[in-house]
Image 1 (cartoon, rainbow, N blue to C red):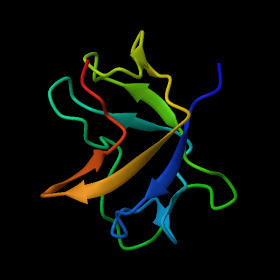
Image 2 (image 1 turned 90 degrees about the vertical axis):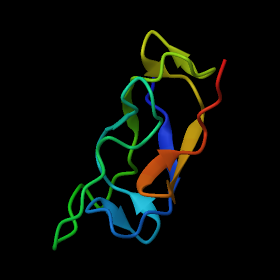
Image 3 (image 1 turned 180 degrees about the vertical axis):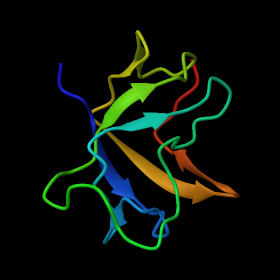
Length: 94
C-alpha cells in the first residue's frame, strides 16, 4: 500500500509548507474527534524534504469514509486552515 499524497496544503505558515506543497515525509491526521493536521506547527525555518511530496502516514479519524485500519485510502488529500486549525478537507464522515 502506498501512502496517499498531500495533494495541496494551503496552510502557508506551517513549517513543512513550501509553495502550497507539504514536504513532511508523513503527516498524521486527526485526534479521533477532529480531522486536523496533527503534524502542523509554526517554525521560523522551513523543514521537511523539499524534493518529496508529503504523504498521510496515519489517520486517527476512524469515522472517515477513507479510513481503513487507521490508514487513509483516499488517492490524495487537501489541507487548509479552517478556523484556528489546519484541517483535512478530504475527510468524509461515514
